[in-house]
Image 1 (tube, helix red, strand yellow):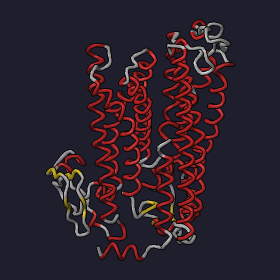
Image 2 (image 1 turned 120 degrees about the vertical axis):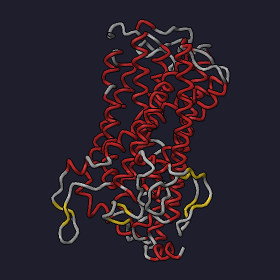
Image 3 (image 1 turned 90 degrees about the horizontal axis):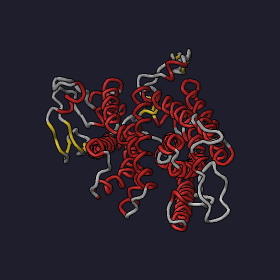
Image 4 (image 1 turned 90 degrees about the vertical axis):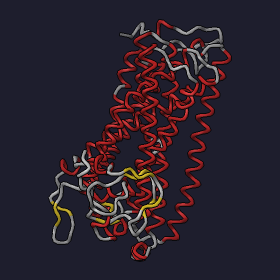
Length: 490
């Protein structure tokens, strides 16, 4: 406890509000990231099915999802812009000294962002004005731009975790920058693929969860079946892959960031035959209370042998490692992420077993109850993954090169606390508006479906078949020939 108090006494007073402000805005923005990155791909997959099979329901789903995609992107503009300003305003020491080294990642993300905005506009415009397959092919670059944006952000973050591609002059400033090495750091590959798989399966489970709720309420039509099956299948396939990728990135952290690994596993003393703690709390004297202790498992997981030596937190000075509280936070976040991931693997196996046996969905309502909450659980893992990555790296903002306290702004703490209050109010309004728009769209679509009895036989501005002429009466039928691509199809 005395060590922690001494460390806190050496930190500037504005550090805590700056951290809280950055944490809040990042935690808010990251909830939108899975949909910004993965929803275009899932939408285009449904779009392709609709064109390939002449399925008007699939096209209707893709069209509706594209509307949600556009609304989400608009909200992401707000939260993403705030973050871009905060990097310069809250952490001028980071950007001033290291911006020339790792700033290219942010530049790539900015270009991808603007390109994605243009492509989303073209995709929305094309539902009524382009030939079916032309529209699809013009939308196909959307997932690629989303992945390019993720590439830029993960390149910057992985550099902060394993900084490379520069030399230091006599004053400690970076020189001789090698851009390729600064982007493709040792942690880039593991972080990037773990991130991509995570956001895609998260988006898949969230979208499928909406239709799982409908299924539980008795809506067993083709619309709900298809809306559930396509995104859930994508998520279920990626879930065991993500589990393997998660193990890989943990092992990369073990080799490249041993103190961070020690924090996430609350390992105090360097040793072999190190036990694994599921949850539990680390104290400043190195003791652990609570949790489930599994003998030797941490060494086995790290190096496939109980004789594997795991570096402990006490191997470095106190001001070069996370505090006991920070280590406990990172440890709990990591364990929650692993626990939810393990349960999702079981859910995916349940789905796969039933599909392989009967080519049908599981019949148990418990499966759909679990599927309905899987999306929310995935969003929790996204938050936990970010907490593990950032809190486990403390006290470094650039691992072993710059402390967070050295990068923070000189702005008065009172001003930062006031700014945090304003941002919380603004974000509450922004996300409230987002939710209101989504609920309005849901009500609009449901009313259209109920008025016309069947979601794939509607004739409203929201429900008539894409690529067909707009219906002028409620009795107008969808143009299935147009949905198959007649006049501009395969």
